[in-house]
Length: 354
Image (cartoon, rainbow, N blue to C red; front, side):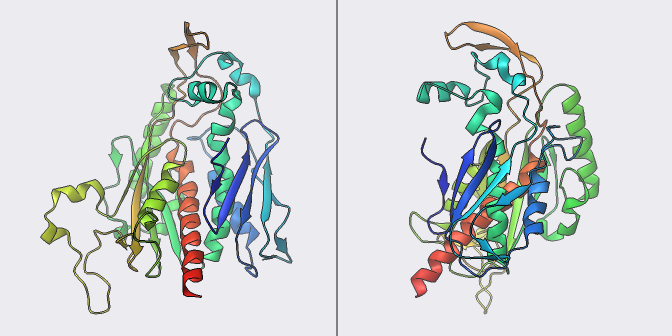
């Protein structure tokens, strides 16, 4: 299986399955001498872990990361950073009913067709549990990018949308509620809606917005390695993501060019920021902001019709512990992937200037 490595210079390779012994990764290319706050890394993991509130999956995992290489006396050595998160609360028996059948909108069918064999326990390698390893690496990337501020939050659940510009929001409120929406009133509505959907045995999608501030001018390359293209790839690699837009996004098509153009101030900043902090594929020093759309979780706790490996139509029902809405736990994952992209481009920019 290819495609387990992300990045060119600041490079992460992940390993492990949802119901295996452990998940983890090897982060290569992190410069030496960075003092790491291990508590901050664990805090990001805690933001992603299951069982943290009544509106997420109730699988109980401590998600404690253990580092095995690349650190000495609290600082990075410049060698590969190896780490693992041991699985402790697998309930593989919850998945025996799909051993020979395929769940709609999951990777089950395509895995069997591509590899001729699959780990049906929780989806194996295709499970979103793999993203915990990304969060560890992304937390390290955040500390490497000390001056860059990355804040993601839930801006939509189903039809409930946060109708405020991000500049009106207090990011310190993101962690004040289980939905991770920085507007308390909207967050309360979203939380109630997710609970209602859960009682119905169904799921709902949503949007995570990410704002990146204090990015220097010059990150990104102008042709195939555009900064927004790599951010898009990073976000679309996250489980359940169906869409990515940055800056004015799809709303920009409603505007005339004369209104959409970001006019310059004398210092090189711009009066507006419809470009989303990126022009010509290169950061321009303004805030980078983008939206990531997540589909409803495919596993619904309802009876449904599907097919088995022999092509027979069968009836089955979703079982196990699943999120009714993934976006609250996706917030630190979006931040992590943004940090990995920016760390990679920062190292590339350094090599070009030496």
